[in-house]
Length: 313
Image 1: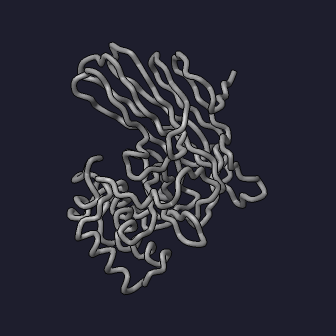
Image 2: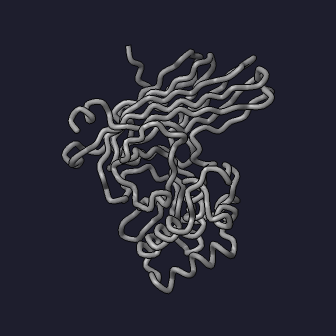
């Protein structure tokens, strides 16, 4: 028997508890408004192993997407392999969250996600999302997205070619960052700032997104971090980590996505999961533990066309 949970469900004790989200949203799009949809399947396991048993673990999971006009959640399941409490809720920005609380001793924990979404290409324009705050909130600087003089000069340099038109400036940012910042997973980590990554001229999707956000906010354009998944078109389905990109507010268009790591606006290959002022606000898993010594994290992620779509291809 499948268990479907409403947002108001209270916390309870569970083991390998499944959460399903079948199009859970206030803004589920209509079938007739979704031409040429693509269905994407995602399997995402995150395992934490502790050198010595942890006495307690608390984690905030932002792993469950909401439907919007460009994406409909067809099925979604989150489960863990330990006894504990899993509380369903929302954060201040409207992201669906699960709060996991586990009492030890605990040698490790695995959080597993399995689901499917149906997407259409909206040319990067995002509509039908939950918006809790005025756009000006996304002009707020954070330690990870503060623009130093180098980023400010880079952003100001775009004004000569693009003027003050927001959309033109944002595409200039997209192209410039994709051109000048090499994708390299080795020199940066989750605490690397936009200024540090810009100085290195290299980084991962998180770093390129932080640079984009810092530059956009310096130019007076509201911008926010997006965590999610990206289905590659080169046949590679097994990935090392989730993906990240940016949404910026454009007059007369609304929120528009920009993926500086790939040099494109999001397409039907992007699966939008959570938003934040920076990575810390949209991280798939964040938390703390009591004890445990050194921690090792392993990620297994597969993003591919759903089985029936593969058969039709």
